[in-house]
Structure formats: C-alpha cells, structure tokens
Image 1: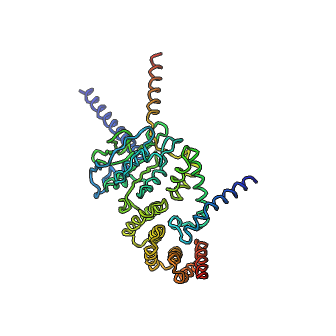
Image 2: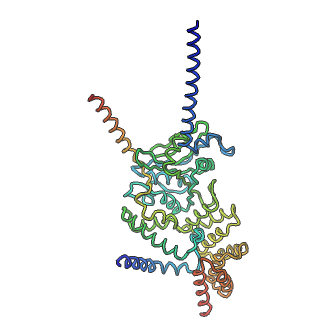
Image 3: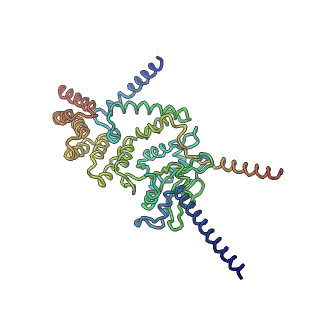
Length: 328
Length: 119
C-alpha cells in the first residue's frame, strides 16, 4: 500500500516534470520557429479582415519552364495574365543571361516595361503579397530552393489561409501547393523579393506614392511614353497633389510631341506650386517649342531667379530662348 | 598616367554619343532626374550614362549581342543600372536547376549506404 502510494507520488512528480520540460521545449520551438518564419508567425495571428480567406486566380495561364528558364516563364505568366500577347520563348532574349544560366531581378522589372506595363517591386512583406493576389495580381517571387544557391522564380496565384497554403505556377508544375512557412523560408533567402506587373490604367493594391511614381517614371524612360501618360493619369487620380507626377505626365506628352497637352498640365502644376524650378523650366521650354518664345522668357526668368540644383539646365534653356528671340 | 587617358577617352566618347541626344531633348528636365531628386542632377546624368555603357559591355561579354544588350539596358532606370554595375556576376540569377541538388543528395545517400555496407 505504502509502496504503491510512493510509486504513485513518484509518477505524478515525473509527469509534472515531463510536462514542464515539454513546456520549455515548446516555448523554445515556438520562438525558434517564429524567428525563422517571422512573417508567417505574424500572419497566423490573424488575416486582415478585408482579405478573403481563400483566393485562386484560376485564369492565370501556365508556361512550363525549359532548362534554366524560369525567369522568362514566370514573366510570361504575369504578363499574359494581364492580356499581353507574349510567350516564354519570346522573353528569353529579353531577360535570360546565358553566362549566368538565369535571369537577374532588375531585368525582370525592366523587360516588363518593354510590353507597356508598369513593373512594381513589392515591399518585402508577406501580407502585401497576399493583398496583391487578392486584388487579382499574380506575384512573381524569388526563392532560393537549393542546398547551394539555386535561385528560382515562381508565380503566386492563390492562397488558402485556413490551411496556410500558397498556390503557385512554378517550373514544370502548373499548380504547386506550398505551406506559408516553407515559402517564407525559401523566400527570405532571396531577400523577400516580389514584383507585380500592372497595366497603366490600374494601380497595384499595395502601391506607395513615391516608389510607384519611380516605377512609372522608369516606364516613361524605357520608351513607353504612350503607356506612361496613362499610368501618370491613373497615378494622379489617386495622388492629385503630386507635382512630380505632373512633371512626368507633361514630359511624356512632350516626348510624344503633344505640346499643347504638356503645356496645359504644366500650367496647372505651376498654379499648385509656383516655386518649382522644374515646372517653370519645362513650361518655358514647351512654350518655346511651340514658337511662343516671348511668352516663355518671363517664365524662364522666374526659374533663373529661384536657383537650385537644376541651375545649369535652366540657364541653358534661357540661352536657347534668347537666341531664338534674337533670330526672329 | 594611362588611367587618366582612359578616363578622358571614355568621357569624350560618352560626350560625343551624348551630344545629339542632348540636343534632341534640349531644355526639358527629365522625370528620372526629378524622381531621383539628387543635388547634382547634371553630374549624375553623365555618371549614369557611363554606367550604362559599362553594364552594356558586361552583358555583351556574357553572351548577349550588342543591339540586344542596348535594348535591355535601355529598359532599366538609372538606379537599376547602378545596382547592376560590377555585380552582374554575383547577383542572384533565377534559374532553378534542381538536377544538381538531386545529384548531390543521391551521391550523399549512395556514399552513406556504401559506408555502412562496408562495415
């Protein structure tokens, strides 16, 4: 009897110890995991209420990759999803680098512009990625899948929050399922790199003002002035007070030879911000290009008076206006 | 000494190529410069022009023909070109060649089996 009681006490003691040891292990494991997959851990705390529990963009096409060419395949996937008529093979000469047997991140962004689309680099954030997918924008992600550095582009086309699963178009798999944490593990090794391609008449769901304007300016610079005018207009509907967007829009008009449109945009911008040297300089130049040099002169004089980092360009503009006035 | 000559030559070449472009867009200050909002707009555009031709040359040495390399660099923003300069060889290049990982794993398992078998 006594022996039994002693044994019983011993058993209870061991059980308590075991439980506390297990508890310690659990805490260690949980905190260890949380630091390995910090964003998944945050996301498991709850999905933002405006995001649906399950999304799958079933209409996104699939381009199975050949050899090392996951870059062209992933890019073709997101471009074709937005209605661009392009195949993975056609993108090979635009993004694939033979000596590296792969495609650089910068070129994925750049090649998108050559098809009249705005490429936007997402913030390194799991939730932003889900937001874009929920808004109908498939997301290109860079993962590191190998024992060594084996970089891979895949396209996230859906997720299921309850089972914490992502759905991807990846390599030769049309519908790959991957758990949130395992994606984060591979994705974090690529610096959480993710991009979307959007047509100029739309904004990405997670667009930030400054960074998105730079994306549109990059499209303008890359020779997509026509698409850029639309993208600037879309931008200005959301952020109407941004003077740089007005400058960009006017520049795109100017490139296309639409000088009256450029003038109208700059005049409106000049009312908003009468002290912008760039607005005054570009307005004066646009007037001069239309042969209205007498009208341009007082505008450029105001810009000269303001000085600043563009002083040299402003003085050049004034010189050319004065020369034209002398000739006439 | 020869370094200086090199630098001057490159600058002259750049300026020669750049001049017609300058005239074509005379007067209007580009959006790239405004968005980048740097204090030395003029100097920056010369520097990024040189960087562009550098990156272009590097791409050519990696198996891209000159015209294609020009088009590809032309689609990049100044900031992107700068991020590539001198790093094309080391930056991640998405490729996915799972075969090597598989080979490594098969070899490791094979070696382990062989080792245990021998004992």
